Image 1 (spheres, rainbow, N blue to C red):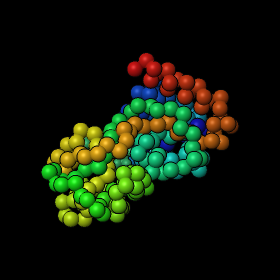
Image 2 (cartoon, helix red, strand yellow; image 1 turned 135 degrees about the vertical axis):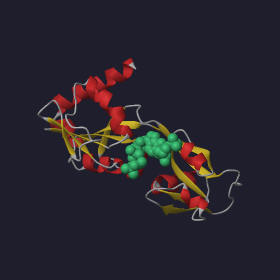
Image 3 (cartoon, rainbow, N blue to C red; image 1 turned 30 degrees about the vertical axis):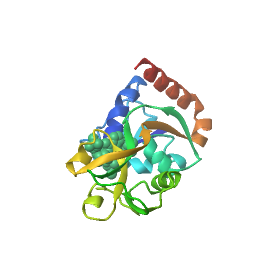
Length: 208
Ligand code: PRT
Ligand code: MG
């Protein structure tokens, strides 16, 4: 059995065409089904539908052989125990700082709300800025509005969510795309199915 971990939503939507090019077609649709394991057109290939932040964990522990995860999630997960053979160039966005529109840059200690605590810590340290990082699990945009933080670190696509909440993008931390990740043991034991899959993804991406 080959198990592929993906998250519902934008990564799933962008991964479907890639999987289809490799002739992997889910039978169930996560939008209408509550199943967390999706069968595919192959008896020996299944998808597990999990939270985006859990994908590296499933793959690292071998609960899934492969996974698709955002680079934002991977750098925050921060593990050497995963192969990352391919940039799939899907679910692209930017990891940025954002602050209330027009607010002056903070000098001295800055309070930052984010779910990317390790990444934010590293970023502000690299800039020589003293930062107090406040971990949130969602709705980061709210934090500066209610005085919880001076700024946030979050992923931005169109910027509409920032604008709708009176915030503006400030510094680019990193361009983000989703990556294929592979369990190290699976890469060895299931090489004869995983390598052709990687090759097919690569071919599809090259033709795009
Ligand atoms: O939603 P959930 O809490 O389950 O988890 P998640 O937010 O980690 O998962 P999901 O599916 O929303 O995102 C999965 C991956 O998609 C992320 O890890 C990123 O690599 C990537 N990605 C690409 C994005 C976006 N674009 C994006 N726009 N992830 C989140 N967003 C958010 C953004 O922060 C904002 O709140 O979507 C909202 C709309 O963005 P704007 O800028 O277009 O308004
Ligand atoms: Mg989300």
